[in-house]
Image 1 (cartoon, rainbow, N blue to C red):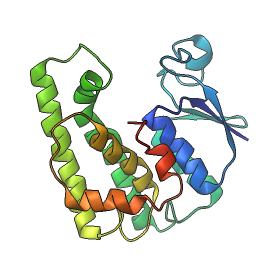
Image 2: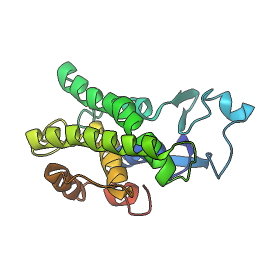
Image 3: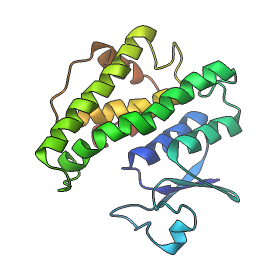
Image 4: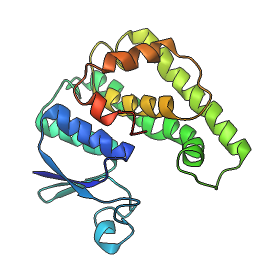
Length: 206
């Protein structure tokens, strides 16, 4: 049995939970995170020195970083649909996963933290710049979806879609001025048929 340390309202925890659902892996969720159980304690930081959720326990194995956990689970399960065995196909999936974790996350963080988490660390100029950057990064994703006409890396749903569907949902739910992206709108509609999308990209979970 896998143990996932985190809380379901965390977008990064939901990546892992959705991956488990898609792989039909049983898990238990041990509540940790802001407002639940503070991870900035020695017990938790012995598992993840960054004091961030999620953390995965799989027997004696401990892993942190949500995208890495998702890759580990798919590889261990031998699932070559979510994470292809072919080197180039796999690299395409991981390329978009890494882009999500670096370029995209950096773009939305100030606007999201100020407008949806109530942080007072960002002034109006920083928020406006973040919104513009966020829309700009989503334009990159929209152009990619327009090229594939289906999912992020092609005709099949992969781990790139797990992480970027959650990101696209967060963008859609944010109280910002949205650029209209037809390919992304079609993509989000297409995702409604994927098991777990309604649960992990639901209206109550930005």
